[in-house]
Amino acid sequence: MNRAHTTTLVTGASRRIGRALAQACLARGERVVAHRRSADAVPEPFAAPVDAWCWDMLQPLDSLPAQDIDHLILSASLFERGHAWNALSADGGAASASAEERERFARHLQVNLLAPWELAVRLNARRPLRSVTMLLDTYLDRSFPGHAAYQVSRAAGAGLVRALAAELTPCRVNAVAPGTVLPSVRDPAQRAEQEDAIKARTLLGRIGAVEDVVDAAMYLRDAAYVTGEILRVDGGRFKL
Image 1 (cartoon, helix red, strand yellow):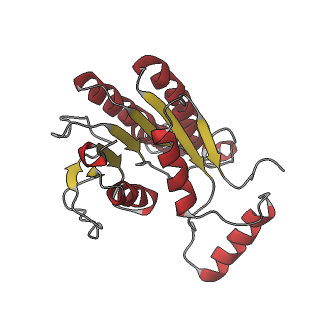
Image 2 (image 1 turned 120 degrees about the horizontal axis):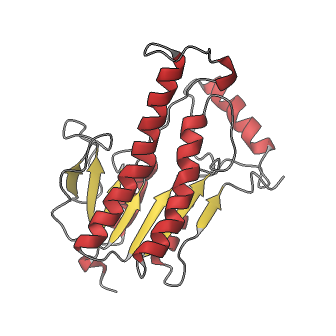
């Protein structure tokens, strides 16, 4: 395969795992279309030139990237903590916590489900894709109070992967469901406490690395006889 003639669109390419995925594609000599939310959010320079494409995924998809896309990697996502539902009051007015939660649901479903769906379907309709690889979350089938909007959107994302695999074939559609590979808190003491708790609930007894997720995503992207699969990369966290 001549990777110089391969173009990969990575959403959420400006930071964290999305950036690492874009860098991995560049390291293979591919052309990368790096999505970011707005033109004002300029990322640090990549290891090689990329084509920038901007789209606020909370807004309608007005136009597709100009480039012909071979592979789509869906890394962009939204995560917001919400309300524990047993703490909500019966008041459902516009200024209530219930109204806030409803709006939070709408945002999560738009960014984590509807926007990826529309982008994949419209790109494939313009020119058949070779693969779609989506990043989900190892918590996609577990719920915790105060995180319902995020968890439901991720569970729906798992259904989306299977639906797209059936609808867009022969385009291959798969997903990676990572465990914790980046700290969610900045305070060093709190971070160490968080990591110790995760290690205690993980068969491999360690926190994962971004490279673990990137390797899994690139494997699925290139696996010629794998589609409709969701690969957990969590060190066996939910096997205990």
